[in-house]
Length: 266
Image 1 (cartoon, helix red, strand yellow):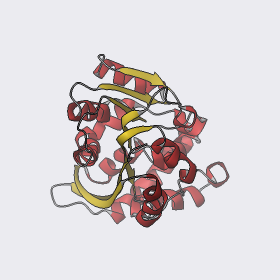
Image 2 (cartoon, rainbow, N blue to C red):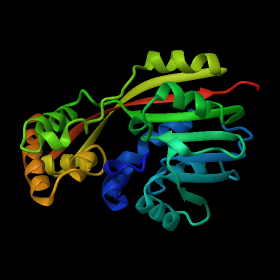
Image 3 (cartoon, rainbow, N blue to C red):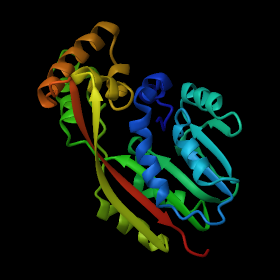
């Protein structure tokens, strides 16, 4: 999903992102299963993407008023087509303001793109109604081979100057988020899960996965010839780091961090 309207992040394509819809949607199902929803009337999906996470949110909160925002017009168009009964708007999370409190604020696979979590997360908690929950899921995979290879290829090619600083480096441990949110909430649950996704198609499938997410800022900064060369180097590294089984399947480990922060009485 996209969070900001900067040139490096705005060019998100719903079709590419949803090539692995089942795998990308599973974490939000696990996240929302841990959210208390009794009496929830208003909910919003921040960085809603093409609406797959919003669909899960609405199913978890039948009868609630559900909406979504995303900075990508392409993602919002896909979400509106998928879920025309709900309200979706092109809005940057950094500039979003709530007109009234929400019972559930969902931020699924989006806050990893948003800086200044020390300010942003408490501000989101402040937009919760009494007893409301902030539900966050973020990839926690910057140490995985797929991400290390992105940084290595970026730093060691003729495009190094163009790609300096593009990589996603902001991250905090579970303990940091707990310490940040616990003084503001009645309850904070934090956990980490490593999914192992079987992808048919070997190294090419892994590349296609990341072309829909973490590779996008790198590729957006390159011209067509550079993109092709970058992807070939990256694919060669992926093939070595993630060897395929005899049937061509690759098992992609994908760690994710989950947070459910529930506000007490105001």
